[in-house]
Image (cartoon, rainbow, N blue to C red; front, side, top):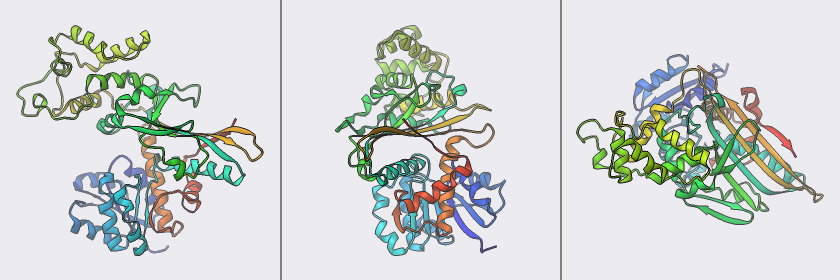
Length: 452
C-alpha cells in the first residue's frame, strides 16, 4: 500500500459525512476534520477509523495556515465567504483545495497565485453547482461534436421532500437553516428568454414561477435562480436564445411564499419590539398585528387582513394559502415566538419548528436539463437529462449525498493526479468533468437521458 494521504476537511455540516465516508473507504486516506468547536468534529469522526477531530478557528490566520500546511489537500465546506482565506493559506503551503461552492470574485483573484504555486483549487463539485455542470456539458459537447447547435437551454434543480413527506402547506421541509432558503426569495433573477435578457426583481420572483414538466407524477414549478445569463458564454452556447437556470418547488409554494413576501416577513431589519431584551413572552398574534399595522390582534380579523395580501386569484389556491396561514399559527394568541430579532428571524424559527424532516422521512433531489437542438442536417429535436434521487431514512439525505460524494470523488482524483489543472478552476472541461462523471454511477448517481 502506498503512503497515506493526509486530507484536511474544514466543516462538519450535513454534506461533510458523505464526503468523509467516501474518502475513508480506501483505507489509504487520513482525514482531519476541523471545526471551531471540536465537539462537532468529534461527533462526526467518532465512528470512522483514520479520522481525527481538531479545533481550528479559520479566522485565526496562523492557526489556519498551520493546519493547512500539515496536509496535502484541504476541503473547504465552510461558508463560501471564507474560501478565499483558505486558498491564501493553501497557496502559501502549496496545498491543493477543493470546494463545492461557486467561484467568487475573491477566489478568482487568486488564480494566478495558485498557478504559480502549482496547486489545484477545484470548485463547484457538489450538486448545484457540480453535477449540473457535468451532465449539461456532456450533452452540449456531444451536440457540438456532431455539428449541431443548442438553441435553447433550461436547467432546473430542487431539493425537496419526497412526495409522501411533502405534507405541509408549503410542500417543503428544511434539513438546515430556513434563513438561506427564505433570503433566496429576495434575489433578482436574470436570464435569456427568446433572445431577450430578462431581469426579475426579488419581490416579483415568485410571480414568475411556471410549471416544469419532468415526470407526470410530480407537480413541479420553477423560477429563475440568480444570474444565469452568463451561462451562454460559460457553457459555450452562442446560439442559445434561451438560457435559464432555476429552482424547483412543488405547486403552490410560490403563491404561499409570495403572500409572506407581501406581508413583509422577509424584512431582516432588527426591531426593538422583537429584540431579545423585550420583556416577557411574545404571542404570534401580536407580531402579525405589528407587521401588518393592524388595529386589532383578534385572530379572525388578522386572517382577514392577511387575505388582502394574497395575489392568487384562483379560489382553491386562496383557500389553500389561508389554511396554511392558520397552520403556521401566526395569528395565535397562545403560540409564543421562539426567537427574537427581525420579522425574518421570527418566521424562520417558526418554520423550523414546523417543517423539519421527521424520523423515517425522505428527501429528494431532482435535476433536469432540457435542450432544444438544431442538428447538422437542419432537423430539430429536444434532449433531456434527468437526475432523480431519494434520501435513505436513517442514512444520508439525497442532498447530502449529491453534494458530499462528488466532492469526495473530486478530492480523490486530485490526490491521485488524475485532475491536474492548476489555478482556481471549475469542472468546465472534459479533462476535469469526465473523470468525476465516470465514477458517479457506482455511487448511485446518474442521469437518464432522452431525445424527443
